[in-house]
Image (cartoon, rainbow, N blue to C red):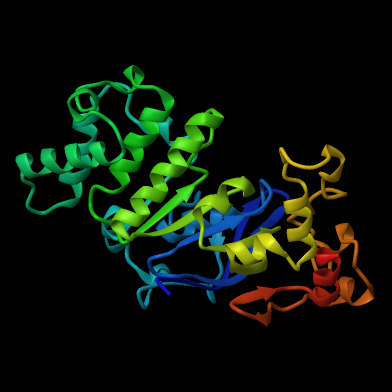
Length: 327
């Protein structure tokens, strides 16, 4: 594993109490693979991603027993200077609506070169400009035009590709993609996903893909983890998980995806509402919305059970859920 989360707990401290956004998560991201984290909005995906770079808001409290292991080192133990060096050089992130993160008063060239200048001890202008040009070409932009442009002179999709190129400037081993196509039209989204797949195959870089767009995951990810209310409910190879999800929440999530095939009535939303993260339900946090819930589900939290073939599910009734999903 390149990254391993061990009992990661993150609360946001607010006036009403502690919002349990990430609640005891343990799972890993395989080296050289694309791992996707999917779930509803508000399930804790972005908080988990930002925890790797330690960029969560000041009211975020990480529990003392939490660990985020990157290449054998606990990132939560690094000093401020060490984590600053870790960002961009070891791990980089493409944020939600990242095209808005560019400085509107600076040319693209200056923003790319400033990033390299800030992190490289021996900065060589000519080499840096060549690398920036090569990366812009890799993301299918014309370097001569893009380098001298201001952000407002580029379309949303072009700005997003600039951000992806910027994330790759210092040759990171690990790339975090937090909803990388937010605010882009459907055609541009598809183009960005094709581009990311191409970059992964060309560079072999490990990617951690955060999204609520389940359909996008199927075309890009090798492995998938399903997150609900700060809990990992199911993990496994993407093809197997999409073919027959075994957790009732995973089944509901996939059943809600619009499809161009079959009857529209076969698509249905998960009943009920996500829980209050300050006062979570006892036992399995999903049991108030689950079609298979029984007494034990409201009394005891299910552990992640190994089902074989690299698959895990946190459900006492996963065998019944699997049968229901296959029927």
